[in-house]
Image (cartoon, rainbow, N blue to C red; front, side, top):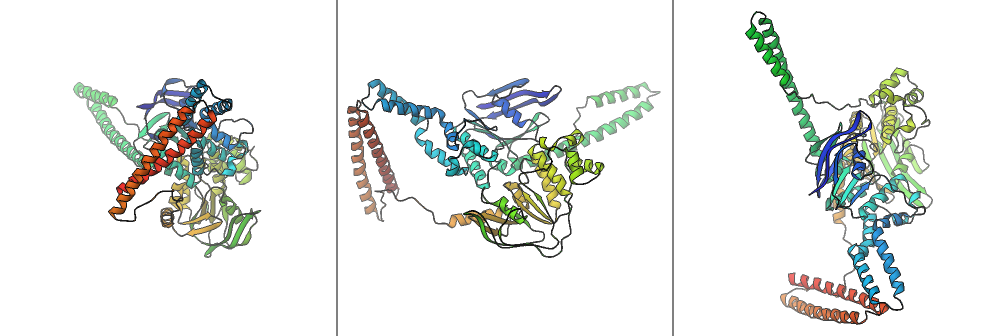
Amino acid sequence: MVDIQVKNLTKFFVIGENLLEGLSFEIQEGECVAILGRNGCGKTTLFNILTGQMDYDDGEVYVNPNKKLGLISQIPKFPAGFTVEDVLRSAYADIMRVKQKMELLECEMVKGATEEQLREYDALTNRFQSGGGYEMDVEVDKICNGLAITPDQRSQEFASLSGGEKTRVNLARLLLEKTDILLLDEPTNHLDLSSVEWLEGYINAFKGTVLAISHDRYFIDQVADRVIEITEGHAEFYSGNYSFYMDEKQARFDLQLKQYEQEQAKLKQLGYTVERMKGWGINNRTLYRRAMSIQHRMERIQKTEKPKKEKTMKASFGEKDFSGDVVFKMKNVSKAFGERTLFSDVNLNVEGGERIALLGDNGTGKSTFIKCLLGEEDFGGKLQFGPTVKWGYLPQIIHFDHPERTLYDTMLYEKNCTPQVARDRLGQFMFQGEDVFKQVKNLSGGEQSRLRLCMLMDEKINLLILDEPTNHLDIASREWVEAAIEEFEGVLLFVSHDRYFIEKFAERIWLLEDGTIRDFPCGYKKYRSILEHEAAAKPVITAAPKPKKEKPKGGTKETDKLVRRLEREIEKQEKAIADLDGKIEAASADYQELTRLMGEKEEAEMVLLDLMEQWEAAQEG
């Protein structure tokens, strides 16, 4: 069954310049499809069209009308004073209205209930149960635990949260809404590694349809069944995850280039033949006609378009020579805010050429650790740098002292370079033409990161510190940053939730957890393997054993005795439930007694279920 179908979709914002042009694709029920493409290619516009938030200029769009569709993109506006808990519970708006009606009806029935009220209450109860009302609390807790939304945060006002926190809460709300079709626009932004891994598990277990716009290559590898790439307004299809997409895209490029080169060689040879035969045919009309026939055949040949290499930025970090062995040493370093200790007793040595990833959940203090290292925060303990160390730093939140300046003026004033050098450097970072006269404050997050990198790469450094360097960058820009870093031979220390980036560069990992930093002298895969082995070795903490649950101590006689005893208890419990059914029918006019008996029956059914499980286990034993 088709859940989404787009045929010849066209959308333009400037007449004559189509953002989407003849875009066509189908999404089948249950598929998870990644939507890729450069920033600005129309991915978010496509999502807004699918949800009806934006109109389109031509084509057809079909979304299964029998399916509930949810979009995580823009954050909805909520009433003043709404807490995070209120936002989460808004996912159950219909069920909450049913609950309110039930509570009003309960108040009315205190002094006695009519048959009509009882029928209405019964219908509401069924709606509440079928809508997941009784599982609501469990579901909210499960989603919050997975996305690291703490109990304290749930009581905060939604308006007081940061942009990243709002995005995370909004994602939780969408998952709680039980939609059939999920549209996820950069869902892993602002999530730490454990939350991203939880989300991957959720999506892989999700029975509905998922469309995900993402620049997180590792995430796409884990969840995507196939990839649709939007390029020049059209769709290119790849029947696999990100790794498949990369291999297939290169194979298609190589094949198209080979076909193009073979065609060009053939056309060149035919052209040479035509020119010679025309020369010979001056006095021979037969040869001349043959030459013209070959020329017409050349014109009819369907020519392969020369494949285009995507424009890439070409730049590298300026490097300062490093002499000595130790880049920096930390001895008994600690940092606390009031009574809250972020980390303590940190003892680390860093030598030349190392590549280190600093990992940990959101809020553990990774960015604060970096600020302590750079002298931007006070701390306890000792920190000593080598005498020739010069560092460069790319912060997570980019700040410019004069955001009103243009990119061109920013380079002139802050880098003290000539106009031509400013133009050349900006051009290397894909800021060309009129783009250089944009004001810095009007740049997107990714463009601001690119500008800061442009300014940073010119400096002579031997210690490069990066805090979430791939945030806000599309895949092409991430690959370019990686290419520049690969050539850097100094020490690299970075904070990142981009597992593709971590796996590519980390040769040593520091894990900030529970107020300490654990040092793993290995890459990301081995680090993950170590953590998995540690988790497997930990004793499993189980809940207290259920009452009356017994297991045979061995021997068939013991087993037979247990089975017979359980069968007698099951028979008694079934009779007790039947008796309760009679009492419930007799108490239909007494609301308070009816409520008590319903609760008693529910408990009795739970006991019966437990006995049945014990009986099945004993039979298998």
